Length: 181
Image (tube, rainbow, N blue to C red):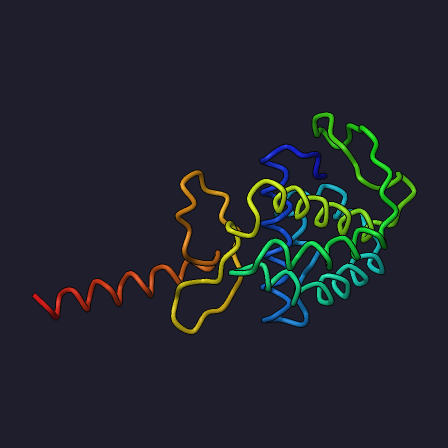
């Protein structure tokens, strides 16, 4: 999925963040649905065993991914290189499922979970090279520590994807202003 295109990198990183946040909250999450929502077109046909392996692998990566918020890019390089060394990366150009020409990082024979992990790692690699860890953050809402990836132009995102977090915080701020006037 990831080809170095900024939109695809954002989609891949958003998917990784969504999986990390969902794993933290729900052991029975629907990994396939999250992948489909983030345009991983092959997720629908992926074997259940590959989806389960992916859930386990993302779970193992979750603490590392969560450390990106407020983390230092130099601290991430070592673990990211170690993870990349474990994946058979063999880039090739492909078109499928109506998607434009793009790069697949793994051979066509690779298991689905290897393909997704390679996409996530390569997207992280590109993001660290381009922006360090500054686009990763922790939700600013009280009682929420979910990770987010800020793909906005002005890098103004403060909240995770749960709309309740922003709404709750803005409502509390509004009420506080009303009390002081």
